Length: 193
Image (cartoon, rainbow, N blue to C red; front, side, top):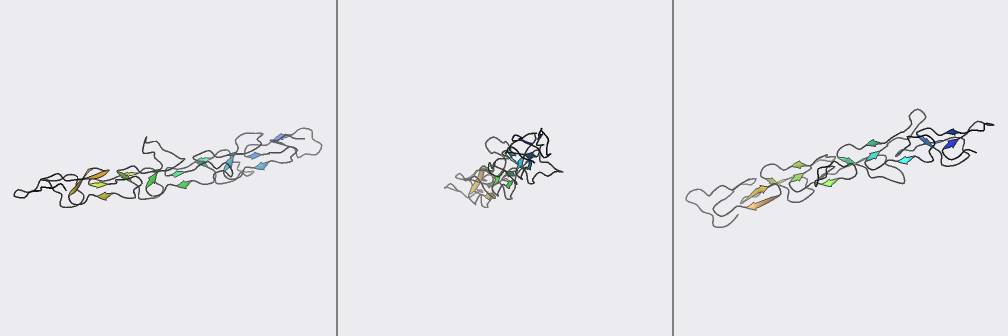
């Protein structure tokens, strides 16, 4: 009888054929090979099982006689796929608003998970590959922000991660300042903010 990974479908024949790439055969004495299911692939002859797509990769279609699945596709920026050992991965998942596929700690691109935007950055759309920097006078004071907020009157954006109170003798009368101008001649500010 044929061993796993092989098959034989010709009566009276004493040799077996190897299952081709894109197919597998887990049992012995089989007369045909099984196509790889969606989420799986096989790039070699004589395989017992099709492999599941690794982290960050997916395969939306099953193998066919005319189109064997030999590999998995990589997720695009702003998407991720975690390996599914049971069924394989058939699609990537979009990063949500407030996150991206770029690691804020080291700047590397990931296809395995999404990361919340770092302080001072935001992402207002799904499927963002990178978080956007806050503009001048705006801040995002916590991770995972969907937008930046202008500093309120009496405060200024010391940087894009927090608003600071204006020092004494300085004042920002409107929101969104990056500094606090000195009080006008003849006026004074004896308190911060």
